[in-house]
Structures are given as C-alpha cells and as structure tokens.
Image (tube, rainbow, N blue to C red):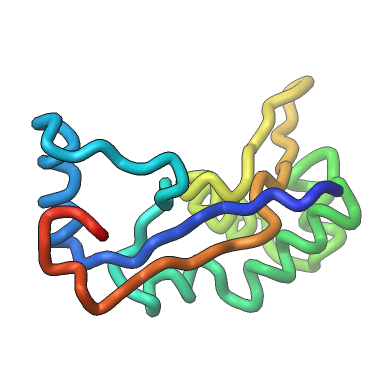
Length: 127
C-alpha cells in the first residue's frame, strides 16, 4: 500500500474560530501545505490516533476486510465498538467507509501523519 500522508495541526478552539472567520472573510488564504484536520490539543489528537486505533488501521491495511462484520472476527472487537471507532476515524478523514453490496467496507485513507503546532499561535491564523 502506498503511503498517504495526512497533515494535522493543533490549535486552540479560540484560534481555530478566529482562523475560520478570517478565511470566511477573505482575510486569510490557507497555504496548500497547511493541515486540513485540526485538533484542540495533543491530548485530543492522541485519543483519535491512540495505539489501539493505530493497530486497527494496520489490521485493515493487512487484512482488507470486506465488511465490519469481517473486521469484527479478525479483531475480536464488538461490531458496535468498531462502528463507533470507524465513524470517528471517518469524521477526521483517516478512513473511508465504502458502502458496497449492502456491506460497509473500511478503507484506510491516511497511513502517516505530520503534526504541526506551535506556542506562537496568538494571531487569528497560524504563521
């Protein structure tokens, strides 16, 4: 599988809102290489990219399950738990849940993560 890098950033909720408003007003144009996914803290990012979730992503890549039920058998995790985790990972663009033939097949969209953050984000937009 080819490496797919996802850029993620960490920025306070307040500065994220300022950044979003600046973009909406046309006062700031995000650079092409800026993160598309933002977390409020390292802690919130670590919950999404936990060791358990990283292992789940590796399992999906290695086994290419055709459904969440198949993934349930491979991982020994309850389907409801897997569905919740996969929907969260989908929300962040890390996985895609493809609906085919009445089944939902998880596909990993990001295999590597580049994290950007700084202590100087006091202006509406990151520098």
